[in-house]
Image (cartoon, rainbow, N blue to C red; front, side, top):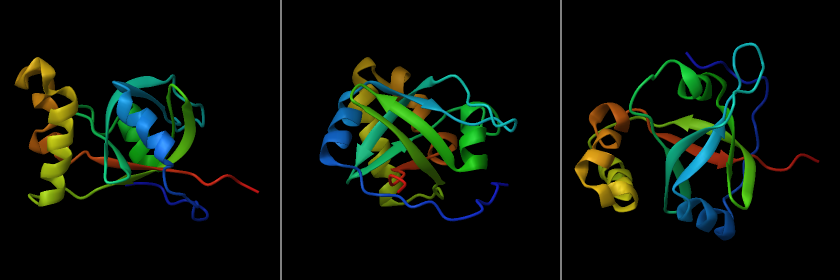
Length: 141
């Protein structure tokens, strides 16, 4: 069960430049907070952009590692060349709808160059159910 934040976190839209940098990179680097409060070492994660939003998925370890921490805390830090930002994490509900297929198609378009073997694990029902939307946190005053 995700932990509730003490107060809501304000987010902002991705800038066109941020979206371009994220879309142009093969992997983003993500860091999440452990239960102890320490930040994990950044790990590479495949990422896609669709309609001004940023999505990541995992194909294994749904309750542990970076993914489990991201779902639990609803926060992460990400970086790609030219972009380093704290984000909120929203777990999306899975379902056989057009949205899930659109994210699948974005993964296939970006990572399918090696054939279905390379991207197949990211478009399974289990991976679809792990889809997270990342939104940049607004700068604090």
